[in-house]
Each structure stands twice: as C-alpha cells, then as structure tokens.
Length: 310
Image (tube, rainbow, N blue to C red; front, side, top):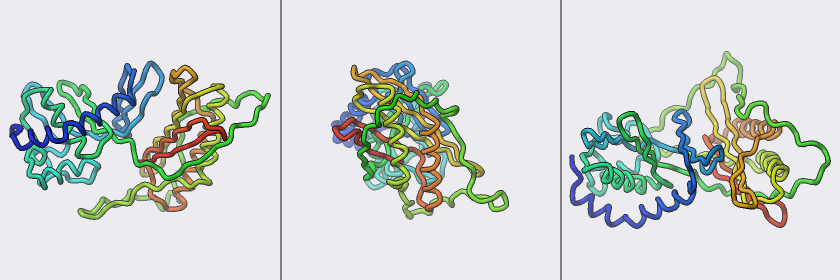
C-alpha cells in the first residue's frame, strides 16, 4: 500500500520530535568515520579510526528495496503482525490504535529513499528509540532502531586510586571471556520460555552495588593510569548467553584533556571483576541484561559513575 494522507498528517505532527531524536543521535556519534554492526549481538558501534564514539543496541526495523520502491517491516511475512515480542512492538500496536495502515501492513510503497527515511524515522520515534540508522544490505537498505538502554538508578562515587610506583598491570589476555555454565552437564540450563502475549517480561536487573564496585574501581584505575586528565570514560560490557556457556566482551574508552577519544586496554583484573559481577547476578536469580554501559566522570572525590543496562 502507498503512504496515505493520514500518515502524512501524523508525520508532520511528530516532525519536531523525530528531528530532535536525530539531532541527539548525531551529537552522540559526531565525528565518526565508520559504522559497524554486530548482528549476532545486536550492537551498532560508531567509530573514528579505532576510537569508539558510541555503542548502542540495534534492532532491525525495516528493509527498503530501491528497485521496487518497497519498504518491508521487520515482521513482514508473519500472519497478524509481529510473532515475537520486541521493543518495536509499539510501532504495530500504535499503528493499529491510530488506524495507520502503513504501520500494520507488511510492506509499504514509498516514493523513494527520502520518504523511506521519513517513514522509518516516525516508526523509530514511535518505538521510543534513541535514533535510527540506515545501512547497506546487499542491493537493499536496512533500517535499524537504536536503543541506549534503561537508565540505572545505581550511582557510585569512586575515590581516585592511590599513587604507586609499581608498573601497570598487564592488559587482559582476552577482552572476550567465557563463564562456565551453571550446574553440571547432566542438568543443562534451558533457554527461557517465550513471552506470552499480553504478559510483560521482567526488565533486566541492575547489578548489585557490592558486585559492581570492584568493576568501577578497576575501570577508574585503568583510566587514571593512562590519562592524567580526562573528561569522561565509557565502559561497555556486552553479554552473549548461549545454552552451554556465557561469553562477555569488555570495551573501555575515555576522552582526554583535549577532548579526543582514547581506546584503553582492559586489564585482566577488570575482566575478572566483570566475570564475578555477572556470576553473582546469575546466582541471585535476577533477570539478566545483554549490555551494561557505565559512564565515569571525574569529580572532587574521584569519579562519579552512572550505569545503564538493557
């Protein structure tokens, strides 16, 4: 179906909100010269050289084929709409509520790439996304809604590390590590059951203060050893949970006194602290998260830390 007058009116109504969403996205990724998608883990990264500017969760929103000028939603082909729960569900449900058939029909005929951008921008705003990105996908374009994750209530103040004449600890032998599966092989852990229609799934739980503090302290120590002054630092941990094991990836970057981003090598101590934090949360039976982002800002008392999980 083509884009009708009802959708055009709604797009004009939310035009300012969509523009502000795109402006915030552009500010977070300002200066990037490369965009990389980790489709396996659903993470999109913006880079300048080898420096990480922004790492964000990405969910495929739509595919646009220029040869037929057709925009296909992520659930296209499923009978009756999306078949599994995702953060994009409000696009379909709100489309139903407001009778915007463009959002509830699997494919939409558009005038071209510019109109596809408008339609996907409106859909991303409707999903309460933090941005929308368009990437080449063979002969087509793939649109991704970007989500930073939920704002954590966990905030810590980390005192500055004590001066020491000892050499810096070696970097981790692997920034990616695996955690043994819980239980023994005779009692494997099964994947969680699928979400039931109309039943909300539990949000990811924040890491406990006691478990997270060693992570924050070591991350701050790595930053202080590398930079005498910094504006802020970003620690990103992504978790890949599989049937028989759990892997995690650790990235650490900071902006120096000149505002340039510096990629820092995580130490083995930092990776060990992350592994302990993840294992403690599993033992507590809390809802697990796929991504943790900790932002460190220098303060008079050392560093202020804010955590987001998703």
